[in-house]
Length: 236
Image (cartoon, rainbow, N blue to C red; front, side, top):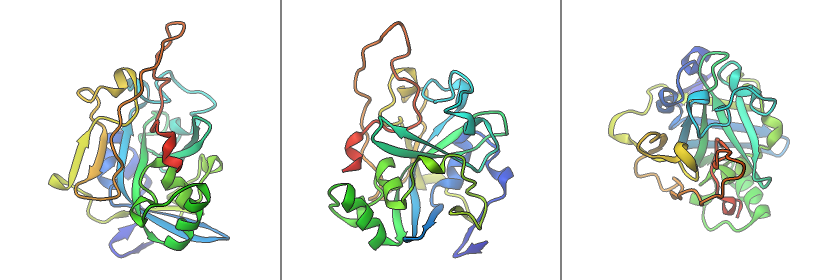
């Protein structure tokens, strides 16, 4: 279950807050295998979400049919369709029953570039290999992941989607932090929630964009509480 300094982590290592799981996930490899082949992405950018205490999270208002996976055991994927256009995937963390997740925002394709390039070209323009998984939608397209992977156990080495993490977590000056992308309302306050993290100097890290202003309706929270980016153009 290891190789090249990477290991499939014990589930207990992800039974922590989303922000605490970040050093484990930055630099991790997510491998997705299908009859088409295998694509592996090295994760370079993530965002943490902390359930009922985080107004930017899908779990902010408590359990629902949609977010049930987030309230389950760590080490599973929480996948959903964003704006009906593309899929975003999160790695669930935190103790069973306490929702937390880390959105996989961007990465470098290190295995299966030709397959990833073909998948991306079918969905739009691919300017360079740097852009293959540069953004949460591009990342899932490159890996061939859709909403059907919701609940997948990425800690099962025999599963179709497997997470392997660095033996030594990313620390210190290697990691940068800032406001989350496209999250509106209080959850988008970078002073309160500077929970977007990336590996410094990585060209595959996506561009930061503020949330577009959204009109309130019926007094509801304008952000819609979303674990994910709000850039439909990332499918291009």
